[in-house]
Image (cartoon, rainbow, N blue to C red; front, side):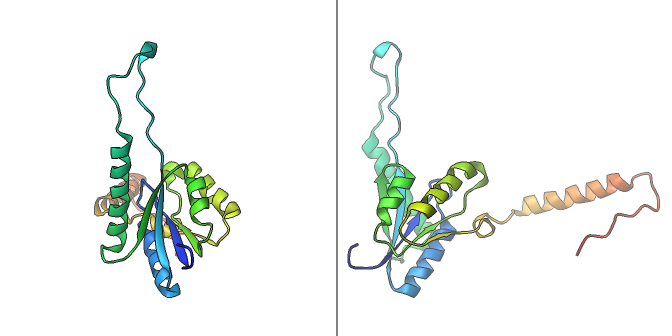
Length: 182
């Protein structure tokens, strides 16, 4: 990509980073530069067998790499649509090293906020990148990246609130719940 400005988006395996992809695509359009979606990939560990014997099952690393590459393209297409031109790169290595190498000449790096389940690992990733990368880093805030609660979750919250209110006032006529803070 030498000679032309580009924005790098780190695409998460778990979430697909749709918010980061959409924001980076809008920014790339504003700046008239290319968009590069990057995902780090590590080969799975080979199966092991006791006593130094060959394992009964083997893994095809090339096929798994190809599957991961198509998953990256599918994640990008799901977030941006098939019409948007994005260069997708699945690169072997750990996330920090891959993103540091890919952003050497980049205009900007865009990442999703860490997920609750993997907050420690992702926070350390973002922290390490902010202090080591040579371009601006944009991290999408959690309020934008977390999915909205489903109808079932909202209904469950309302039901739980009503049950708590009923339990608090049961057997106590005249007791009223305090007003909700504004």
